[in-house]
Image (cartoon, rainbow, N blue to C red; front, side):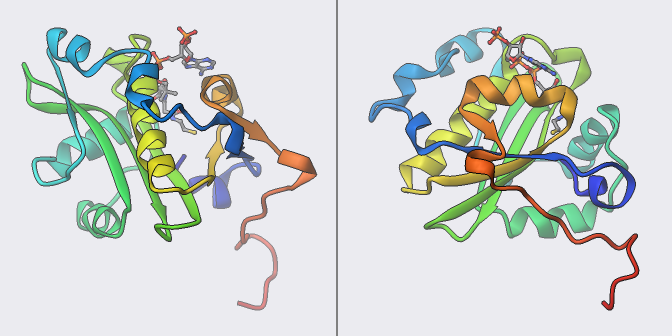
Length: 182
Ligand SMILES: CC(C)(COP(=O)(O)OP(=O)(O)OC[C@H]1O[C@@H](n2cnc3c(N)ncnc32)[C@H](O)[C@@H]1OP(=O)(O)O)[C@@H](O)C(=O)NCCC(=O)NCCS
């Protein structure tokens, strides 16, 4: 989710991926929807931001309720992002599903900005980008994978292998609402 939760909403549940949820070595076989099936339905999977129109991406963020962000800042964020998965609807050449992960490339990753255009929700695109993002991270040997989840989306992440408060570990985020020193 977007970091807006830090300043404007109750603390989100922190979810981590259990190492046991690692896909099989030939992880592509475990995808719920294959690349070919997506292609046949008019969708193309993308892993690079080279062809990604950031104004269109920003529109998807806004459409799902995220606050509109400065496109230039999104560009910088994506340049500092380890892994990106997005889906283009070929008919309109617009992004309709998106997920990204930042991290240290070896041990840890955090997933952000998991969104599907409301007109395309419920047909497996969110799961498709998440599965491929996880495959990429796990393929690099990264097993400590976390994300922040809106309470209403917990049920989307759980079947993908995420658990809340693993072993009692609680996530904490810096809150500017408190009278903190910094
Ligand atoms: C959450 C979101 C990414 C899901 O994407 P989607 O493409 O609609 O979901 P999918 O069609 O891939 O659904 C995959 C599975 O998750 C389930 N699912 C989807 N959204 C769910 C939800 N909110 N709660 C519980 N289960 C959910 C589906 O029923 C489906 O189950 P199945 O595999 O048993 O058929 C999308 O609804 C969205 O963009 N929401 C608004 C933005 C948002 O909240 N992002 C997450 C911020 S933490």
